[in-house]
Length: 477
Image: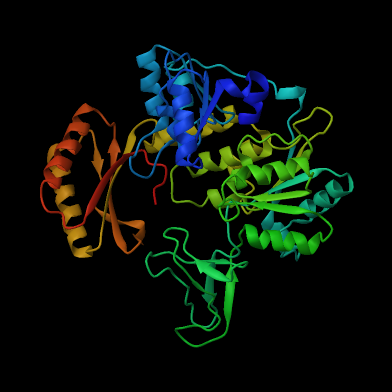
């Protein structure tokens, strides 16, 4: 993004703000904006707070992306902040996406609260890539147990011969998603969180992706003493290993959280892939975000079901968005048509079929009817009150008191309040987690009731219990 803007407007007029900058760099950029030297500010979520004078327009690119909402303190939604700032400055707010957030599209198409502007042609007069869906059940029935379907294997082979580039997308990092004893069923879990550890082959370590805890690889089961330890599930490291084995002469590069820890490593990987014409880029969601690689003509989605099987009402929406976005990386030049191969165990799922046609309208019309029938957003709000603490008994007690308070003060005909339950991941960093889910429209009265309750509760000694309220959270976990 920065390269494109600098080539058009020059470096002097542009400031950049994101979390990988050092404090000194951030201070310099901030001053450049405050003194009016920078006319364009490019940045991630926190850039919305830049001290811009005489603001003319706010543009939120890939507006459907969940990362615009901060999950850590201070919690804020950059889109909501942008809406407020745009109103204060009497300037337009432009939300851009090939796969808009369903709620925003509903406000534009059905309610007319947002002006809808549509781009009907692809850049560079390029045509949409051809999408093929592979049924992995059929691959297994035919004796293929590898991570690559026969179709994807032969397409990579063909691409290598033609000196074209390939992107392989798998939304799981690590080598295996869990380690289990085949004798007694023991699964290696994090000692701080109630979640299985992921095996990372390069460091020969088991790691927790929630708290960072790590331990050495288990070779003997601590429960029964068996040596029948097996690795289940696949991650980007395992995929990289298999690609190197199947295509030993191909150059590969991997892009996930484990490979972009150093400063500027994100940019370096992308630059290396583009400039050195590396054959295959393997990565997680990072590789689907708006990148323009003219020589990429093949995209392979290794497991399209990983986002379908999440415990969230937006599972279909997330799947459609990811698949459509990743497909958009292929065939971006007029003379180099693109090909996308999607591997799945659910080839008849409507979000996968809609992504094959890259038909947002068709997806929207189907999904919005389901949301309406089930009374999910945008037809109501889902308010999650989260509790976490070291003492489980205290946590149950405070969550039950909260439930009774809400039942008394929120109107039963307006809100459906569910009893306190442990969160899907009921322990993270040695803290137990409970939650109350409320379905209804977050109106002024509900806001007052929740704020009054929080004020009242926090005046008492909570003994290390933390309470949070999140409206339409990014994750239901």
